[in-house]
Image (cartoon, rainbow, N blue to C red; front, side, top):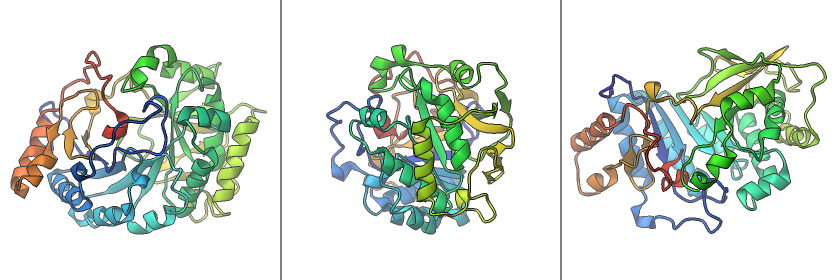
Length: 377
């Protein structure tokens, strides 16, 4: 699918629920948000039908999101159904999760056909984690990350939204990723939903993250590195002699390693199991570390929009296609489907959504009412 600005659309993010077991301060109010009526949420067979049609139009990567996708029962069945579409052209099937419910099901999801996972985690300090998530259990998340590595859901990417409250953990996260085999990516806070009220005071741009990571410079961009369909830009970070993780990060590293059950990092035969600093760890063409450099990603959601290369559509849990994260414009594909639309008619609706993608994200628009828990990021 080619939009009217010549961009090839190959990536579909599918939200399977608007519910979440966390109440992260920048995502939801403490009391949560009223969930969509159960009857309005797409059934798995409806999601699979939409995915099949999207793949026929050129979608090659699908990411399952939420809310928190693992709070929805039977998710492995959907993964298996989507995995069955590979013969039609699907190449990559992934999921974004907070990982708190991942440990018991990571192996089953891999067996069902899931390729990889992204895990959202903004702090390695248990007290800070409880505050940010309003009661979440950091250990459960770290065990989920370790289980994903052990299951071979590679690469396991760790998404860290950086704010004034956790900017002091940037180096720790880079060391954490290097010593566990996780791919750490730092993300700028977007002014969506609840984050709109805190974003001006909490915002940290990528340049400051890099400066905090390496005050003397030397963080260099690596072009063409890393699997996936997203907007991350990867950089090498030169390791300084004597740099050690904090006690919080060291504890997190041990928890992830223990959850791996002694298997090779990333679940790949021949990969180093120890995860020592500087160990060459990689997967699917991604070299995470070399003896003197670590690889970290940056997603410049605000300071440097990725609009010129945007290749994605989003499907909300209630069946609406969102052509742009920053726009309130949506097309109700679910309603058309439930009204009896044929595959040909639904294909035209998907095509219309592609043509509705704006050239730029329109950051000047009011996006304070856009809920990430509903859109799936």
